[in-house]
Amino acid sequence: MKISRKMNKRAEVEIQFHWVFVIVAGFVILGFFLFLVMKQKGISEVKISSSIASDLKAIFTGAQVSSRTLNVVKIPATKISFTCEKNQNVVYSVFTIGKRSEPIPSQVIFSPGEIETLKLYTWSYEWQVPFKVLNFLYLSTPRHRIILVEKKSIEGKRLCNFLNSTLPDQMSKVYISDIAQTPLTQLPDQNNNVETIVFCDFTSQEITNSISYYPAQVETDTLVAISIKGDEKFGNIVFHQDGKDKFINPSQPIKYAGAALLLGAIFSDNSLFYECNREKAIGRLRQVALIYEEKTKQLAQNARAECIYSDSYTHFSKLKTTNDPAEITQSASALSRINSELQSKSCALIY
Image 1 (cartoon, rainbow, N blue to C red):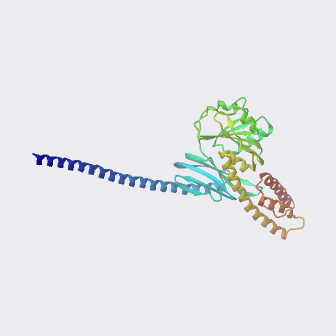
Image 2: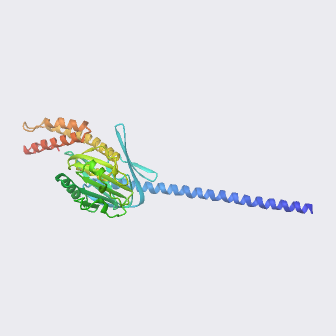
Image 3: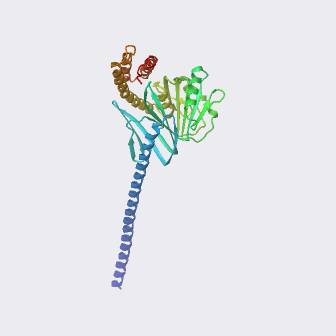
């Protein structure tokens, strides 16, 4: 009997050990297959991200060629992030999909910080100072609403009319000509990802002090408010933060030179991203100004007496060194005048 009991206990222990072994082995095998699945999923996601990133890079390059043309691009459901940073005198910008980041070495792209859409709007506009420097690229989606608010002033009406007529009609736009009659609190909620409110000729104080300028019932991921004092040639832009019941903490006024930089603010969702891309554009301006300066000096060598090119040299020197949009605007205006004078005398043109 004792031997039988010992054998039974031994059998029970062996059975328990067997099941423990089976369970442990099962977990090991299951973990191994889960590891393979996750690894394969990661590899697949990287491949998909890389494919989309490569396609978008080609799309961005192609879209920038045709100025003032809106393209609607269908893309897979994915999140695209844009960053722009300045390290000493070098501006570095990238766009990121998943774990794949692609540098944007020379293009100037204005966009919300994050885009998640099946339809991507690409639109370009030339930056001329006064010669063409490059086409800026602007990115948007059907769920990005731009609200233009006109102040009852000549400048406000002119600025808002310019923006409304320049921005593509296919984009989601709202024009408010009288905020007293149509306060932002009456705006319908369209479940947009981004809402950008553009106050034409309003002061920063007017916007931060008035709760009626805030669309309280609108639900959106990103709410951006900018106030602009100026016109399509030159002015100041102020970005306002979303205070959840009114706009707060306005940025310092940011100068712009030309319509292309003015438009860039409408597609940016913060002042740092906008200023970074502005610096990138000015860096490209320096390179192009150098080329036109060399061309002008060559023209001057064999020019007729009445064809005076030397007046342009100081303005090219300014464009090669300044970061100030006010000085860029002044030099651009002067070069435009000089070029017109040369044309009136049948001289070879600077640009």
